[in-house]
Amino acid sequence: MALRSKKIGIFDSGLGGLYVARAVRAMLPHYDYVYLGDTLNVPYGGRSLDAIYTLSKDAIKYLFEEQECDLAVIACNTASVTALRKLQIEFLPKHHPDKRILGVIVPTLESATELGASRIGLIATDYTVRSKIYDEEIEKINAHATIFAKATPLLVPLIENQGEKYMDMVLADYLEPLIEQGLDSLILGCTHYIEVKDRVRDLTRHRVRVLSQDEIIPPKLKDYLSRHPEMEERLGQGGTLKIMATDINPSFLKNVEKLMGEGVKTEVAAF
Ligand code: DGL
Image 1: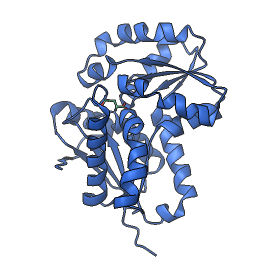
Image 2: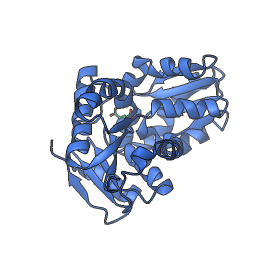
Image 3: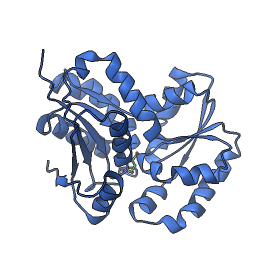
Image 4: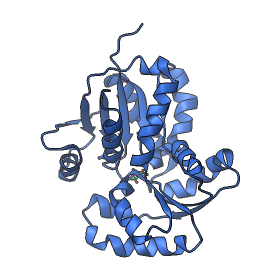
């Protein structure tokens, strides 16, 4: 049997995936993790398909080839909708047939369906909304459910640049017309939005169930590992976390400290 030495990579375009990583570690603390934020290229949301695919492929390649990861979670919705299928179909079989890449779209929609959602709002980046992947995937999971999507491009820059004081106004403007469509649930379809989930819950006055990926991905990953012992048995159990970013800037460091605690080092990922 292979030694338990491999790590779980968690990839995001920037800092948003730190919320997912923190929640995953809270539920599955014994594994070894490498977090990679592509802070040099964030935001991905307004970029072209080719650019997002190439950035995501390079990041996953780095996690697999330089950071001893055998399993990678693409926490970023924009990268999941753009790159995941192509990476699974083209990149993995050719370069790393034994490794696995998971995304966040299908687990999010499965959770929504398990909770009985049928009129599902989605707020996400421009790219995620235009891709219509949430619509395509819900069709396969529950053909009776409908997605009501709204691109909310101002949220990532506000979150990345400490724009809290403008947040409620912007959120209210985005959310009111959506909620009026009689939603039962609302997906926060961008890792960054986890930061504002409590505000969204307050603003919607709990009229809809707000689905946040920091609450969805950890149990789904746990379930995946229990169904895939061939992967689980490869994973190291040192309980370590390595945080990496393509650009170590003050905003990222501030968020690492806020979310992961003081004294957690960030290393530069160069690829
Ligand atoms: N983290 C990305 C997502 O989940 C959003 C930020 C970006 O545009 O890069 O969609």
